[in-house]
Image (cartoon, rainbow, N blue to C red; front, top):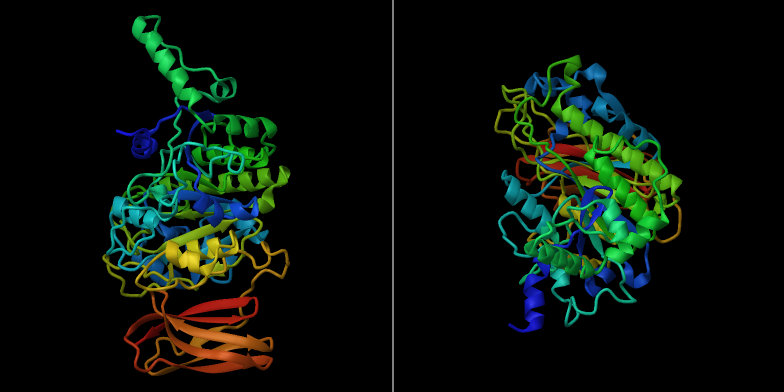
Length: 528
Protein backbone atom coordinates (compact mmCIF):
# COMPACT_ATOMS: atom_id res chain seq x y z
CA UNK A 1 0.00 0.00 0.00
CA UNK A 2 1.37 3.41 -0.95
CA UNK A 3 2.04 5.84 1.91
CA UNK A 4 -0.38 8.42 0.57
CA UNK A 5 -3.16 5.85 0.17
CA UNK A 6 -2.51 4.61 3.70
CA UNK A 7 -2.90 8.13 5.07
CA UNK A 8 -6.05 8.76 3.05
CA UNK A 9 -7.75 5.63 4.29
CA UNK A 10 -6.65 5.93 7.92
CA UNK A 11 -6.96 9.67 8.59
CA UNK A 12 -10.43 9.27 10.09
CA UNK A 13 -9.29 6.55 12.45
CA UNK A 14 -6.28 8.44 13.79
CA UNK A 15 -6.80 8.64 17.54
CA UNK A 16 -4.68 11.23 19.24
CA UNK A 17 -4.83 11.95 22.99
CA UNK A 18 -5.82 15.51 23.82
CA UNK A 19 -7.81 16.72 26.80
CA UNK A 20 -8.78 20.27 27.63
CA UNK A 21 -10.24 21.04 31.03
CA UNK A 22 -10.92 17.35 31.55
CA UNK A 23 -12.94 17.12 28.31
CA UNK A 24 -11.91 15.08 25.24
CA UNK A 25 -11.40 17.09 22.06
CA UNK A 26 -11.87 15.99 18.47
CA UNK A 27 -10.27 18.23 15.84
CA UNK A 28 -11.02 18.03 12.15
CA UNK A 29 -8.39 18.43 9.48
CA UNK A 30 -7.92 21.51 7.34
CA UNK A 31 -9.62 21.85 3.97
CA UNK A 32 -8.89 24.78 1.66
CA UNK A 33 -12.46 24.57 0.30
CA UNK A 34 -14.12 24.53 3.70
CA UNK A 35 -11.64 27.14 4.94
CA UNK A 36 -12.87 29.39 2.13
CA UNK A 37 -16.48 28.38 2.70
CA UNK A 38 -16.38 29.56 6.30
CA UNK A 39 -14.63 32.80 5.55
CA UNK A 40 -11.01 31.78 5.94
CA UNK A 41 -10.11 33.21 2.55
CA UNK A 42 -11.15 36.66 3.79
CA UNK A 43 -9.44 36.26 7.17
CA UNK A 44 -12.72 36.25 9.04
CA UNK A 45 -12.63 35.63 12.76
CA UNK A 46 -16.29 34.59 12.98
CA UNK A 47 -17.11 31.43 14.92
CA UNK A 48 -20.14 29.10 14.81
CA UNK A 49 -21.05 26.93 17.81
CA UNK A 50 -23.42 23.98 17.28
CA UNK A 51 -25.10 22.40 20.30
CA UNK A 52 -26.74 19.04 19.78
CA UNK A 53 -29.64 18.30 22.13
CA UNK A 54 -29.33 14.56 21.66
CA UNK A 55 -32.31 12.28 21.97
CA UNK A 56 -35.06 14.45 20.51
CA UNK A 57 -36.09 17.52 22.50
CA UNK A 58 -39.77 18.11 23.34
CA UNK A 59 -40.32 21.46 21.66
CA UNK A 60 -43.87 21.99 22.94
CA UNK A 61 -42.63 22.04 26.53
CA UNK A 62 -39.63 24.21 25.56
CA UNK A 63 -41.18 26.99 23.48
CA UNK A 64 -44.84 27.01 24.47
CA UNK A 65 -47.71 28.32 22.27
CA UNK A 66 -49.84 30.09 24.87
CA UNK A 67 -52.53 30.88 22.32
CA UNK A 68 -52.99 27.11 21.86
CA UNK A 69 -52.98 26.32 25.56
CA UNK A 70 -56.49 24.86 25.81
CA UNK A 71 -55.83 22.30 23.09
CA UNK A 72 -52.30 21.73 24.37
CA UNK A 73 -53.63 20.81 27.80
CA UNK A 74 -56.22 18.56 26.20
CA UNK A 75 -53.48 16.75 24.26
CA UNK A 76 -50.93 16.37 27.06
CA UNK A 77 -52.55 16.99 30.45
CA UNK A 78 -49.98 14.93 32.37
CA UNK A 79 -46.89 16.75 31.02
CA UNK A 80 -48.03 20.25 29.98
CA UNK A 81 -46.56 23.11 32.02
CA UNK A 82 -49.12 24.95 34.13
CA UNK A 83 -50.05 28.10 32.24
CA UNK A 84 -49.38 30.40 35.20
CA UNK A 85 -45.82 29.06 35.43
CA UNK A 86 -44.87 29.61 31.79
CA UNK A 87 -42.51 32.54 31.16
CA UNK A 88 -43.72 34.87 28.39
CA UNK A 89 -41.19 35.59 25.65
CA UNK A 90 -43.26 37.79 23.37
CA UNK A 91 -46.96 37.98 22.63
CA UNK A 92 -48.54 34.54 22.85
CA UNK A 93 -45.23 32.65 22.90
CA UNK A 94 -43.80 31.34 26.16
CA UNK A 95 -40.80 29.39 27.39
CA UNK A 96 -40.24 26.71 30.03
CA UNK A 97 -39.74 28.23 33.51
CA UNK A 98 -36.44 26.36 33.88
CA UNK A 99 -35.07 28.60 31.10
CA UNK A 100 -35.32 31.95 32.87
CA UNK A 101 -31.74 32.81 31.89
CA UNK A 102 -32.51 32.19 28.21
CA UNK A 103 -35.55 34.45 28.56
CA UNK A 104 -33.28 37.15 29.98
CA UNK A 105 -30.91 36.71 27.03
CA UNK A 106 -33.89 36.98 24.67
CA UNK A 107 -35.00 40.18 26.37
CA UNK A 108 -31.45 41.51 25.99
CA UNK A 109 -31.36 40.77 22.25
CA UNK A 110 -29.06 37.73 22.34
CA UNK A 111 -31.53 34.93 21.52
CA UNK A 112 -33.66 34.13 18.50
CA UNK A 113 -36.24 31.35 18.25
CA UNK A 114 -36.98 29.43 15.05
CA UNK A 115 -40.34 27.68 15.22
CA UNK A 116 -41.15 24.14 14.05
CA UNK A 117 -37.87 23.22 12.39
CA UNK A 118 -37.59 19.85 10.68
CA UNK A 119 -37.52 18.30 7.23
CA UNK A 120 -40.11 16.74 4.89
CA UNK A 121 -41.11 13.12 5.47
CA UNK A 122 -39.48 13.00 8.90
CA UNK A 123 -37.82 9.80 10.09
CA UNK A 124 -38.44 8.67 13.68
CA UNK A 125 -35.16 6.80 14.11
CA UNK A 126 -32.53 8.54 16.23
CA UNK A 127 -29.71 7.31 14.02
CA UNK A 128 -31.31 7.95 10.63
CA UNK A 129 -32.68 11.35 11.60
CA UNK A 130 -29.34 12.51 12.96
CA UNK A 131 -27.74 11.25 9.75
CA UNK A 132 -30.15 13.42 7.76
CA UNK A 133 -29.20 16.46 9.84
CA UNK A 134 -25.49 15.67 9.38
CA UNK A 135 -25.61 15.05 5.63
CA UNK A 136 -28.35 17.61 4.85
CA UNK A 137 -29.98 14.99 2.62
CA UNK A 138 -33.63 14.61 1.69
CA UNK A 139 -35.22 11.96 3.90
CA UNK A 140 -35.61 9.55 0.97
CA UNK A 141 -31.97 9.98 -0.07
CA UNK A 142 -29.03 8.31 1.66
CA UNK A 143 -25.79 10.22 1.26
CA UNK A 144 -22.43 8.78 2.25
CA UNK A 145 -20.93 12.19 2.85
CA UNK A 146 -21.55 15.01 5.26
CA UNK A 147 -22.23 18.49 3.96
CA UNK A 148 -18.75 19.60 5.06
CA UNK A 149 -17.10 16.37 3.93
CA UNK A 150 -18.21 17.01 0.38
CA UNK A 151 -15.88 19.98 0.41
CA UNK A 152 -13.11 18.08 2.17
CA UNK A 153 -13.20 15.61 -0.73
CA UNK A 154 -11.62 18.28 -2.89
CA UNK A 155 -8.62 18.46 -0.52
CA UNK A 156 -5.22 19.62 -1.79
CA UNK A 157 -3.09 16.74 -3.16
CA UNK A 158 -1.23 14.89 -0.44
CA UNK A 159 -3.44 15.87 2.48
CA UNK A 160 -2.82 15.53 5.38
CA UNK A 161 0.90 15.75 4.54
CA UNK A 162 2.00 19.36 4.79
CA UNK A 163 -0.68 20.48 7.22
CA UNK A 164 -0.81 22.50 9.36
CA UNK A 165 1.07 25.24 7.55
CA UNK A 166 1.52 29.00 7.65
CA UNK A 167 -1.80 29.60 5.89
CA UNK A 168 -3.76 27.20 8.08
CA UNK A 169 -2.01 26.63 11.42
CA UNK A 170 -5.14 25.67 13.35
CA UNK A 171 -7.88 23.01 13.10
CA UNK A 172 -10.92 24.24 11.24
CA UNK A 173 -13.54 22.52 13.40
CA UNK A 174 -13.43 21.06 16.90
CA UNK A 175 -15.78 18.68 18.65
CA UNK A 176 -15.55 18.76 22.41
CA UNK A 177 -16.55 15.61 24.24
CA UNK A 178 -17.11 13.49 21.12
CA UNK A 179 -15.42 11.61 18.28
CA UNK A 180 -15.14 12.85 14.72
CA UNK A 181 -18.52 13.80 13.30
CA UNK A 182 -20.26 12.43 10.21
CA UNK A 183 -20.60 16.05 9.10
CA UNK A 184 -17.05 15.79 7.67
CA UNK A 185 -17.43 12.38 6.05
CA UNK A 186 -16.26 12.58 2.46
CA UNK A 187 -17.60 10.49 -0.42
CA UNK A 188 -14.75 7.95 -0.12
CA UNK A 189 -13.14 8.52 3.29
CA UNK A 190 -13.83 10.50 6.40
CA UNK A 191 -11.80 13.66 5.96
CA UNK A 192 -11.71 14.41 9.67
CA UNK A 193 -8.93 13.68 12.11
CA UNK A 194 -10.11 12.45 15.49
CA UNK A 195 -8.23 13.81 18.49
CA UNK A 196 -9.45 12.05 21.61
CA UNK A 197 -8.08 12.06 25.13
CA UNK A 198 -7.70 10.01 28.26
CA UNK A 199 -5.35 12.53 29.84
CA UNK A 200 -5.87 15.77 31.71
CA UNK A 201 -5.61 19.39 30.72
CA UNK A 202 -2.30 19.54 32.58
CA UNK A 203 -0.96 16.76 30.39
CA UNK A 204 -1.96 18.70 27.31
CA UNK A 205 -0.05 21.75 28.50
CA UNK A 206 3.02 19.92 29.78
CA UNK A 207 3.29 17.23 27.10
CA UNK A 208 3.17 14.43 29.68
CA UNK A 209 1.75 11.01 28.81
CA UNK A 210 0.02 8.35 30.89
CA UNK A 211 2.40 6.15 32.82
CA UNK A 212 2.71 2.53 31.71
CA UNK A 213 3.90 -0.50 33.75
CA UNK A 214 7.66 -0.88 34.20
CA UNK A 215 7.77 -3.91 31.93
CA UNK A 216 9.02 -4.50 28.38
CA UNK A 217 5.47 -4.21 27.11
CA UNK A 218 4.96 -1.10 29.25
CA UNK A 219 8.05 0.50 27.79
CA UNK A 220 6.76 -0.16 24.30
CA UNK A 221 3.38 1.33 25.25
CA UNK A 222 5.06 4.45 26.61
CA UNK A 223 7.04 4.80 23.39
CA UNK A 224 3.87 4.45 21.28
CA UNK A 225 2.10 7.06 23.38
CA UNK A 226 5.00 9.47 22.96
CA UNK A 227 5.08 8.95 19.19
CA UNK A 228 1.30 9.44 18.95
CA UNK A 229 1.56 12.65 20.96
CA UNK A 230 4.35 13.92 18.72
CA UNK A 231 2.12 13.34 15.68
CA UNK A 232 -0.69 15.32 17.22
CA UNK A 233 -0.21 18.17 14.77
CA UNK A 234 -2.60 20.68 16.32
CA UNK A 235 -1.66 20.26 19.97
CA UNK A 236 0.80 23.17 19.97
CA UNK A 237 -1.77 25.58 18.55
CA UNK A 238 -4.34 24.46 21.13
CA UNK A 239 -1.78 24.77 23.93
CA UNK A 240 -0.83 28.27 22.86
CA UNK A 241 -4.45 29.42 22.59
CA UNK A 242 -5.32 27.96 25.99
CA UNK A 243 -2.33 29.71 27.54
CA UNK A 244 -3.31 33.11 26.15
CA UNK A 245 -6.76 33.36 27.77
CA UNK A 246 -8.54 32.41 30.98
CA UNK A 247 -12.28 32.24 31.57
CA UNK A 248 -13.58 35.34 33.36
CA UNK A 249 -17.27 34.63 34.02
CA UNK A 250 -18.26 33.68 37.58
CA UNK A 251 -21.54 32.22 36.26
CA UNK A 252 -20.19 28.81 35.21
CA UNK A 253 -21.35 26.00 37.54
CA UNK A 254 -18.72 23.98 39.37
CA UNK A 255 -16.83 21.51 37.18
CA UNK A 256 -18.73 18.35 36.18
CA UNK A 257 -22.07 19.72 37.42
CA UNK A 258 -23.09 20.86 33.94
CA UNK A 259 -21.45 19.04 31.03
CA UNK A 260 -22.52 21.61 28.45
CA UNK A 261 -21.20 24.50 30.53
CA UNK A 262 -17.87 22.66 30.83
CA UNK A 263 -17.71 22.35 27.04
CA UNK A 264 -18.67 25.96 26.33
CA UNK A 265 -16.14 27.13 28.88
CA UNK A 266 -13.41 25.55 26.76
CA UNK A 267 -14.84 27.09 23.59
CA UNK A 268 -14.75 30.57 25.13
CA UNK A 269 -11.17 30.09 26.29
CA UNK A 270 -9.94 28.91 22.88
CA UNK A 271 -11.79 31.63 20.96
CA UNK A 272 -10.40 34.34 23.25
CA UNK A 273 -6.96 32.74 23.01
CA UNK A 274 -6.89 33.30 19.28
CA UNK A 275 -7.47 29.81 17.92
CA UNK A 276 -8.64 30.30 14.33
CA UNK A 277 -11.09 27.39 14.47
CA UNK A 278 -14.36 28.29 12.74
CA UNK A 279 -16.78 25.64 14.03
CA UNK A 280 -17.22 24.08 17.47
CA UNK A 281 -19.62 21.22 18.20
CA UNK A 282 -20.93 20.55 21.71
CA UNK A 283 -23.70 18.34 23.02
CA UNK A 284 -26.17 17.86 25.87
CA UNK A 285 -28.36 14.81 26.47
CA UNK A 286 -30.37 12.74 26.97
CA UNK A 287 -33.63 14.30 25.76
CA UNK A 288 -35.25 10.95 24.86
CA UNK A 289 -37.88 11.35 27.58
CA UNK A 290 -40.35 8.53 26.91
CA UNK A 291 -41.08 8.44 30.63
CA UNK A 292 -40.65 10.67 33.67
CA UNK A 293 -40.25 13.76 31.54
CA UNK A 294 -42.03 15.55 34.38
CA UNK A 295 -42.41 14.45 37.98
CA UNK A 296 -45.91 15.90 38.42
CA UNK A 297 -44.83 18.49 40.98
CA UNK A 298 -45.11 22.29 40.83
CA UNK A 299 -47.33 22.38 37.79
CA UNK A 300 -45.08 19.96 35.86
CA UNK A 301 -42.20 22.42 36.04
CA UNK A 302 -39.74 19.87 37.41
CA UNK A 303 -38.45 16.52 36.19
CA UNK A 304 -35.85 15.19 33.76
CA UNK A 305 -36.74 17.57 30.96
CA UNK A 306 -36.69 20.61 33.24
CA UNK A 307 -33.26 19.60 34.54
CA UNK A 308 -31.85 19.40 31.00
CA UNK A 309 -33.40 22.70 29.93
CA UNK A 310 -32.06 24.31 33.09
CA UNK A 311 -28.55 23.13 32.26
CA UNK A 312 -28.89 24.49 28.72
CA UNK A 313 -30.12 27.83 30.03
CA UNK A 314 -27.37 28.19 32.65
CA UNK A 315 -24.66 27.14 30.18
CA UNK A 316 -25.74 29.64 27.51
CA UNK A 317 -25.97 32.44 30.06
CA UNK A 318 -22.48 31.75 31.45
CA UNK A 319 -21.04 31.38 27.93
CA UNK A 320 -22.45 34.69 26.73
CA UNK A 321 -21.26 36.41 29.91
CA UNK A 322 -17.77 34.95 29.45
CA UNK A 323 -17.57 35.99 25.81
CA UNK A 324 -18.56 39.52 26.83
CA UNK A 325 -15.92 39.72 29.57
CA UNK A 326 -13.33 38.31 27.16
CA UNK A 327 -14.44 40.90 24.56
CA UNK A 328 -15.09 38.37 21.82
CA UNK A 329 -18.89 38.29 22.06
CA UNK A 330 -19.46 39.75 18.59
CA UNK A 331 -17.37 37.02 16.94
CA UNK A 332 -19.53 34.09 18.04
CA UNK A 333 -23.01 32.88 17.14
CA UNK A 334 -24.50 29.47 17.85
CA UNK A 335 -27.56 27.34 17.52
CA UNK A 336 -29.12 24.30 19.12
CA UNK A 337 -30.46 21.37 17.13
CA UNK A 338 -32.08 18.03 17.91
CA UNK A 339 -32.74 15.10 15.61
CA UNK A 340 -36.51 15.52 15.99
CA UNK A 341 -39.19 16.87 18.29
CA UNK A 342 -41.80 14.89 20.23
CA UNK A 343 -45.44 13.94 19.64
CA UNK A 344 -48.15 16.44 20.46
CA UNK A 345 -50.02 13.95 22.64
CA UNK A 346 -48.19 12.66 25.71
CA UNK A 347 -48.06 9.02 26.74
CA UNK A 348 -49.25 7.39 29.97
CA UNK A 349 -45.73 7.26 31.44
CA UNK A 350 -45.53 11.04 31.90
CA UNK A 351 -43.40 11.27 28.79
CA UNK A 352 -43.55 11.93 25.05
CA UNK A 353 -42.62 9.77 22.07
CA UNK A 354 -40.65 10.48 18.90
CA UNK A 355 -42.17 13.26 16.81
CA UNK A 356 -41.14 15.55 13.98
CA UNK A 357 -40.64 19.32 14.08
CA UNK A 358 -39.32 21.33 17.00
CA UNK A 359 -37.80 24.74 17.82
CA UNK A 360 -34.20 25.83 17.38
CA UNK A 361 -32.50 28.42 19.56
CA UNK A 362 -29.93 30.72 17.97
CA UNK A 363 -27.72 32.75 20.29
CA UNK A 364 -25.16 35.52 20.25
CA UNK A 365 -24.97 39.28 20.07
CA UNK A 366 -25.27 39.14 16.28
CA UNK A 367 -28.46 37.08 16.02
CA UNK A 368 -31.81 38.51 15.04
CA UNK A 369 -33.63 38.51 18.41
CA UNK A 370 -37.10 37.63 17.19
CA UNK A 371 -39.37 34.60 16.98
CA UNK A 372 -39.20 33.28 13.42
CA UNK A 373 -42.54 31.86 12.36
CA UNK A 374 -45.91 31.67 14.10
CA UNK A 375 -46.80 29.41 16.98
CA UNK A 376 -47.66 25.86 15.94
CA UNK A 377 -51.35 25.06 15.62
CA UNK A 378 -52.67 22.40 18.01
CA UNK A 379 -55.97 20.94 16.70
CA UNK A 380 -58.69 20.21 19.21
CA UNK A 381 -59.00 16.64 17.93
CA UNK A 382 -55.30 15.76 17.99
CA UNK A 383 -54.64 12.02 18.16
CA UNK A 384 -51.67 10.09 19.55
CA UNK A 385 -50.12 9.62 16.11
CA UNK A 386 -50.25 13.31 15.15
CA UNK A 387 -47.08 15.37 14.90
CA UNK A 388 -46.26 19.03 14.56
CA UNK A 389 -45.79 19.73 10.85
CA UNK A 390 -42.54 21.27 9.72
CA UNK A 391 -42.74 25.02 9.23
CA UNK A 392 -39.06 25.72 8.45
CA UNK A 393 -36.59 23.26 6.91
CA UNK A 394 -33.43 22.96 9.01
CA UNK A 395 -31.41 23.42 5.82
CA UNK A 396 -32.93 26.89 5.50
CA UNK A 397 -31.28 27.77 8.80
CA UNK A 398 -27.97 26.24 7.69
CA UNK A 399 -28.13 28.13 4.40
CA UNK A 400 -29.00 31.43 6.04
CA UNK A 401 -26.14 31.19 8.54
CA UNK A 402 -23.69 30.34 5.77
CA UNK A 403 -25.00 33.26 3.73
CA UNK A 404 -25.13 35.94 6.43
CA UNK A 405 -22.46 34.85 8.91
CA UNK A 406 -19.80 33.42 6.62
CA UNK A 407 -20.79 35.35 3.46
CA UNK A 408 -20.94 32.20 1.33
CA UNK A 409 -22.22 32.80 -2.24
CA UNK A 410 -25.68 31.41 -2.96
CA UNK A 411 -24.40 29.18 -5.77
CA UNK A 412 -21.99 27.54 -3.32
CA UNK A 413 -24.76 27.05 -0.78
CA UNK A 414 -26.97 25.41 -3.40
CA UNK A 415 -24.17 22.97 -4.24
CA UNK A 416 -23.52 22.30 -0.57
CA UNK A 417 -27.18 21.63 0.27
CA UNK A 418 -28.66 19.81 -2.75
CA UNK A 419 -32.35 18.94 -2.51
CA UNK A 420 -35.35 18.11 -4.65
CA UNK A 421 -37.08 21.22 -3.24
CA UNK A 422 -34.47 23.50 -4.82
CA UNK A 423 -33.11 26.58 -3.07
CA UNK A 424 -34.19 26.77 0.56
CA UNK A 425 -36.21 29.77 1.76
CA UNK A 426 -34.24 32.45 3.58
CA UNK A 427 -34.58 32.75 7.36
CA UNK A 428 -32.95 35.93 8.74
CA UNK A 429 -31.47 34.38 11.89
CA UNK A 430 -28.45 36.72 11.73
CA UNK A 431 -29.14 40.41 12.27
CA UNK A 432 -28.68 42.28 9.01
CA UNK A 433 -25.54 44.39 8.83
CA UNK A 434 -23.50 42.59 11.48
CA UNK A 435 -21.09 41.15 8.91
CA UNK A 436 -21.15 43.86 6.23
CA UNK A 437 -20.42 46.59 8.76
CA UNK A 438 -23.71 48.48 8.55
CA UNK A 439 -25.81 48.44 11.67
CA UNK A 440 -29.52 48.63 10.87
CA UNK A 441 -32.04 48.07 13.59
CA UNK A 442 -32.84 44.50 14.54
CA UNK A 443 -35.53 42.88 12.45
CA UNK A 444 -38.96 43.43 13.95
CA UNK A 445 -42.35 41.89 13.46
CA UNK A 446 -44.91 43.43 11.14
CA UNK A 447 -47.44 45.21 13.33
CA UNK A 448 -50.99 43.91 13.52
CA UNK A 449 -50.49 41.06 11.04
CA UNK A 450 -53.44 38.66 10.91
CA UNK A 451 -55.17 36.44 8.35
CA UNK A 452 -58.96 35.94 8.48
CA UNK A 453 -60.98 33.77 8.12
CA UNK A 454 -58.79 30.94 9.25
CA UNK A 455 -59.45 28.20 8.14
CA UNK A 456 -60.28 29.57 4.69
CA UNK A 457 -61.94 27.87 1.74
CA UNK A 458 -61.55 30.14 -1.29
CA UNK A 459 -60.22 33.42 0.00
CA UNK A 460 -58.85 35.11 3.11
CA UNK A 461 -57.78 38.64 3.96
CA UNK A 462 -54.39 39.58 5.37
CA UNK A 463 -54.35 42.71 7.51
CA UNK A 464 -51.26 44.57 8.74
CA UNK A 465 -49.85 48.03 9.45
CA UNK A 466 -47.66 49.23 6.59
CA UNK A 467 -44.89 51.78 7.15
CA UNK A 468 -44.98 52.79 3.51
CA UNK A 469 -42.62 50.88 1.25
CA UNK A 470 -42.12 47.71 -0.76
CA UNK A 471 -44.04 44.74 0.67
CA UNK A 472 -43.67 41.10 -0.28
CA UNK A 473 -46.22 38.51 0.82
CA UNK A 474 -46.02 34.83 -0.15
CA UNK A 475 -47.80 31.61 0.74
CA UNK A 476 -45.56 28.63 1.53
CA UNK A 477 -46.42 25.00 2.12
CA UNK A 478 -45.15 23.00 5.10
CA UNK A 479 -42.05 22.05 3.12
CA UNK A 480 -41.20 25.73 2.72
CA UNK A 481 -41.91 25.93 -1.01
CA UNK A 482 -43.53 29.07 -2.34
CA UNK A 483 -46.95 28.12 -3.70
CA UNK A 484 -48.38 31.56 -4.36
CA UNK A 485 -47.05 35.12 -4.44
CA UNK A 486 -49.77 37.30 -2.95
CA UNK A 487 -48.09 40.71 -3.04
CA UNK A 488 -44.81 42.15 -4.35
CA UNK A 489 -45.01 45.94 -4.73
CA UNK A 490 -44.90 49.26 -2.91
CA UNK A 491 -47.75 49.91 -0.48
CA UNK A 492 -48.89 53.19 1.13
CA UNK A 493 -48.48 53.89 4.82
CA UNK A 494 -51.34 52.82 7.05
CA UNK A 495 -53.50 49.74 7.58
CA UNK A 496 -53.46 47.44 4.58
CA UNK A 497 -55.95 44.72 3.74
CA UNK A 498 -54.71 42.30 1.11
CA UNK A 499 -56.89 39.54 -0.42
CA UNK A 500 -55.27 36.09 -0.24
CA UNK A 501 -56.57 33.76 -2.94
CA UNK A 502 -56.35 30.12 -1.81
CA UNK A 503 -58.63 28.65 -4.46
CA UNK A 504 -57.13 25.65 -6.18
CA UNK A 505 -54.77 24.84 -3.33
CA UNK A 506 -54.88 21.41 -1.73
CA UNK A 507 -56.45 21.29 1.69
CA UNK A 508 -53.89 21.53 4.46
CA UNK A 509 -51.65 23.86 6.42
CA UNK A 510 -49.84 26.79 4.79
CA UNK A 511 -47.86 29.76 6.05
CA UNK A 512 -48.42 33.35 4.97
CA UNK A 513 -45.15 35.34 5.14
CA UNK A 514 -45.01 39.13 4.89
CA UNK A 515 -41.86 41.28 4.72
CA UNK A 516 -41.43 45.05 4.61
CA UNK A 517 -37.84 46.21 4.96
CA UNK A 518 -36.48 44.91 8.27
CA UNK A 519 -39.94 43.86 9.43
CA UNK A 520 -41.04 40.27 8.88
CA UNK A 521 -43.86 38.08 10.21
CA UNK A 522 -45.64 34.85 9.38
CA UNK A 523 -49.01 33.34 10.25
CA UNK A 524 -50.30 29.83 9.71
CA UNK A 525 -53.31 29.45 7.43
CA UNK A 526 -55.43 26.32 7.13
CA UNK A 527 -57.07 25.74 3.76
CA UNK A 528 -60.26 23.68 3.67
